Image 1: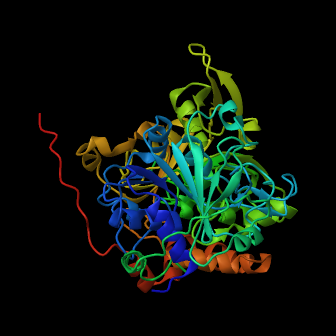
Image 2: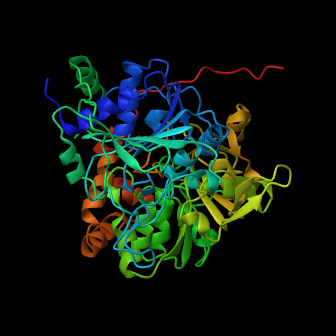
Length: 253
Length: 303
């Protein structure tokens, strides 16, 4: 069964949630992937969306465009508002944060604030929203993004959401007791961090993708193991379930 | 002065040039768009717009030249992408310069919570290590008991919070349900509250379900009955999100001239909310109604 880049991204991201109890998911591909996980490998998964909905029941074909669209309210387990939702995270109750990509550097720092200088930016981006809070407060964070050279830059122009900052122990030293950015899931493969330097390295490749192809789409040096594991291709069942979740392809493109 | 007023009178009397105005307290739901349109019609100036995420509302008000400053977590168009007016204002000072104070959703929520609690700051574990953690609203603080390093978020005290709710009585007691965002903390943090609502209901309806009252009337300066007052954002149980309206705005506002056309068509040439609903047309308004009611199980307050 053939599949698109976005479908591959969603399927691989969903697999990361096997066995996970709770996920704080951003809208778009992360949310689609969380719903897919719920319908395949993680039936116990409680999805939390930032607008303040815990355990919303996502209706296939009617996924929300925003994290607190009223579609996230009917038959949710709880609608605590956003302050309390983030307090659940700060208290340490939320296992995985699942966020979309912006500009990302070798230490997993994310920028969604400005491209260029802060005072006179070339592009003013929307800002943090809740991204910083999800990355600061969830126990484990995964970034789900298309793999493009313009996104993977040597240094972000602004640290909106901290990964490992300047590497080593700098994240912990800044006072961030929770969490690590554990993995970057892209449509070309997965990237993980060296346990000491906390710099990104290639972890696995998706079917048919070469190391060179990943490097060509990454704006910084990317070490790779000698033998890179290859991801299992999406199964027919995964793809069919995925397509049933977003039949109008509002998020899958 | 009675609290129940027309939207025009409420904005004229309660919102002054130079004020800080909190809107979008329920994030992308219950955004008081109609109140924003009236602010633009009355050419309010030098406002500080405060929010968590107010979807594309702030992009409109910035484009209309009413804002001098934004204090919030996110400005753009949630489904469509970047905010074109926000970009023009920050990148090249068009239509005027715009100062930006960055927050995250949680830091803004905590800033309001601090003000709502009557304390000058609250400690948290978020924002640490990021570049905007360095800004004036945040400072490092040490726990006096454990010695832990935390981040202090300064209290956020808007002059006025404008909130759209499902129903209120004429004293301003408000029932709200669905996604609540920071609605209650915004009401308690602000100097005063201006409500717009889908329905004005008898006082008895409020008293029948006091757990659903998020805002007591004594915090409220004015209440205006504005059906579809959150359009194009959704109001649970009343109106759906009008997705096309966001995409259309995004396309039209791409350049300044297109935005001005949009502004004239949907705001400046329109006679208040009635004229706006007329422009939407009966078919479009009908499409925004939920398919059916989805009633909660009733609860007994028996004693």
